[in-house]
Length: 287
Image (tube, rainbow, N blue to C red; front, side, top):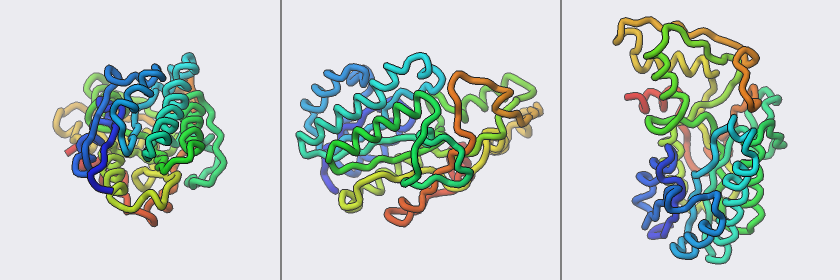
């Protein structure tokens, strides 16, 4: 798939920023931020697509404030479900394809082993429900598409768990971190580079839903320990930070989280390419 015209949403988000870099070799990239195309303004979404006339829409933009979504369900659904539906509808009119990103939070976390693409979805918070509705809208449009579910996304810009933990470790002597939620931390650059690699292949013949996360699994507590070790935090600062494991119930939040949301990526790895282990990717990110 060479010399295509790509409309990329969310260029200022952590994944959109990486995608703009990763996609350059594939063709012309028209990267838009919220000031150019606000996903809460569906008419503006339509007009932007009709103006750009892309051959491929890549949509990493989303409403990602998981707890805030509990009080703003209408906005979460507009951005995460209605806007992708409009994108897919306009893509169909243009004969264009679409890449859309979703989340491990479409599952309830009760399976206890890695989820495969065919597993029954059952979101337990508004964010997960809104992202599932977006998946279904893209699937229903009848266009060539990739829906890539990912999890626990982090990077060195924006708001994410990695940067939060580094900041808190500077400010505090002790951190209490949830140790009973299991997932796969995934570097946004891994997602972007894997997406670009897939798009160099004859992917439209393999259109559909895939899981795309780093390999292996950990807890938020385990991830925090790895983050501080990579940063050589205690050694460099001379300050010792105690990272204490706590239970989900000891850190109540407005939105429920799945206790186990590890995704099996065997389908993607057998179809397109291998994926790195989460610890390897985290070390590269923090280098």
